[in-house]
Amino acid sequence: MNLPFIDLRAQYQALQPKIQARINAVLEHGQYIMGPEVQELEERLAAYTGARHCITVASGTEALLISLMALGIGLGDEVITTPFTFVATAEAIVRLGAVPVFVDIEADTCNINASLIEEAITTKTKAIIPVSLYGQTADMDEINAVAARHGDIPVIEDAAQSFGAVYKGRKSCNLSTIGCTSFFPSKPLGCYGDGGAIFTSDEGLAQACREIRVHGQSKRYVHTRIGVGGRMDTLQCAVVLAKLDRFDWEIEKRQEIGDRYNRMLDKNNFSRILQQPDRTSVFAQYTILSKDREKIQVALKREGIPTAVHYPIPLNNQEIYRSLYLHTPTPVAENTAKLVISLPMSPYLQNNHVDKIVAILCQC
Ligand SMILES: *Cc1c(COP(=O)(O)O)cnc(C)c1O
Image 1 (tube, helix red, strand yellow):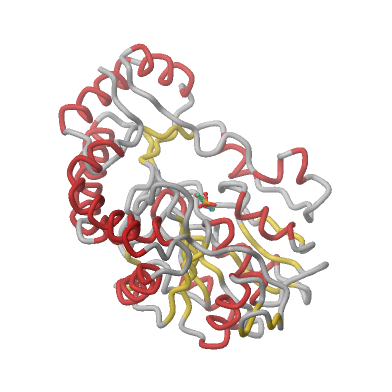
Image 2 (cartoon, helix red, strand yellow):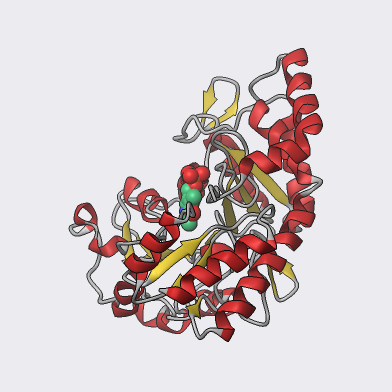
């Protein structure tokens, strides 16, 4: 077997005429920056999530940075987040001179433990960034309630892995003050380069994000804020538009494959990420926990099956971050980082691939 970890080629083959027509349309009109596809995508995505505003940006990382800037977060402010995430979550915080405060995770979902947030709040806390890890949201209502009790601290959902997921009947990216997602090619809804989006129903924040995205300008060459060069280009918006019609079908497929993995692994007593009954996962990753991680990686690799570890080192153990954050122990994150291993997942993965992967796991 020579299985891709995420099968972008099969998706391209299924959507080829649509993708090429959309790209050709951009080449014909030539508006490569802020062309009509940008607004079209923003309207479609806002409607999809239910948020009033969508602002497309250059990447998921930029979405987090611009959101924090729009909230006025800067030097010495504290931002509560999880250490068990991709580095971009904390990077956006420290880039602004703010301080990440890492709160430990739940052992079964690997998302931030909402019940530990309150004790981490101080007078300097200016935002909370839960991450919807592996495609499943954290307990957003619990987090929103804690934030509301402490003077309405803004909550930014890092939904880079969870676009399309549902929490208590509402869509990821529309669950808190701001939602940020990524269209990095391997994310559930990916483009063919870098891209991302910010979602909010707050008019003032939406306006701030729009201006910060283009060098803080309120009108051409009138700069009323400090901004960034953070636009998503028209071609990448066109690619996402081409993929959007098939996206719900792809989510269904991901969930069917996720369920199949779940059933087979449960039968064989493997430990895996738990999906909560009040929310769905879009399975950006399908992740299990095992003390035999290395053995599993070797056995799958021998059969041409790739794996990945998301993430091997919690951010508060990264050397460069040691001097930048407030030290609180996160023993669950530390232990989990030693156990997690992600298996191949894409809407185009076949049942017999899943069966083969589980059969190999059972021999480890
Ligand atoms: C991918 C990812 C990001 C960053 O998105 P980019 O588009 O690659 O900048 C941020 N947070 C999380 C949790 C991610 O998985």
